[in-house]
Image 1 (cartoon, one colour):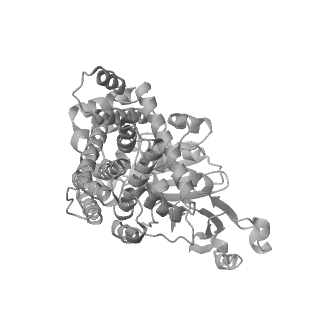
Image 2 (cartoon, rainbow, N blue to C red):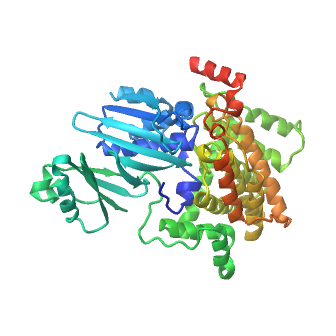
Image 3 (cartoon, one colour):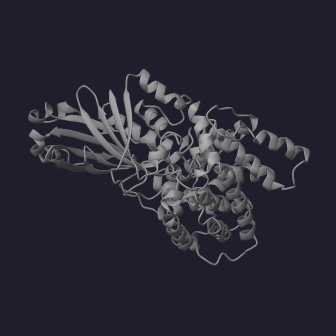
Length: 520
């Protein structure tokens, strides 16, 4: 699996989306968009295959993979309100879709195998979801590639009778990243860059122009990768070394990092995060106001919590109760297909806004203060994304809610005016307390025990933040904690890593709820 340095907006706090799961729904939509481009926007049939040994064999429908994939094939954005109706829209567009499950031996649990057809051409595309909505296309027409959706990819296809011409075509385009992919059946020239290639068939020598098909796959992530990228740090230790002379707060270090990663100013980084904060707040407000969606297992509960909290009928949790309200409201918005921010995933989307935004309100902090807290959290997320995973299918729920808890702890310390060292210590303690969390969704839905685990992760973040502010000793440096967390997650049994094959997923009640939802 290829890996680029993480971007806060690509990998950590984002995508902005609808749907139950970022690693299923948002990632599938991005895969669908790239597949659509591969076919020049004309698709008549698509066969989707999932491996019996992966997570998608049992979760592709209930976790939104089908919904996202059909939306992508239609060219839809992940924020589109009609996304839950994408299957019906696909049929209305005249696209025949079939899903098969078989023994393909795919090494990654989130592998998509697509075969796409129209009257003129057939292509295959294999891709994986790597967590938090991020993807990698690993093969096109059974030729290995590594496309991360972070740049324009122009593909020039030739058939088997012309495959010897590929290298000659390559020679006409000396600029950019140019690669030849070939086998006995044919091949293509791949040209990668930050901008689309501004030429067409008429620019090719005459002997090629009649035999070449050109397809441009557009980027699917907000922050593109640049060839001149130079990052200030990629680990917590490197960041601390960098900051010895700079003496910057954690949020400013995050802005510095993302500016270098994305080629935008630090001021623009701050404003992008402000936009994210406002979307998060909108999800909280929508959840509290009331949500309704037929295909879910939990109804609207945050409204009752707020009423009882305001009446003083709950145990006095102070800030914690405000956080619980915001967490549950966000999760209810997600389950009703409202607009949320995967932070770092949709399954854990309640933790960061629930903790940081609710705490900011409780403390009377400004919007700028909340944005700084989210940036600080994003910096911790970069270290996790670089050295571990956000995919529950790979590392269990500790990869999602556990990571979100460590991020939120750093955000809360920043909100309280703590130091970089205190924020890192809080993050380390929050992560240490999250090891071993399994992913066992009830009725194969990303609602429960996800809701409780989001609340647990936010409460853990608040506790760890106060311990960090009190200068408790985390003992183990953050980099070592992240590495250990990754090792623990990958050691979990396959059945406990978001496959609906273990834990609460297999209880009689869980199966009964799933049967009831299937009948409706």
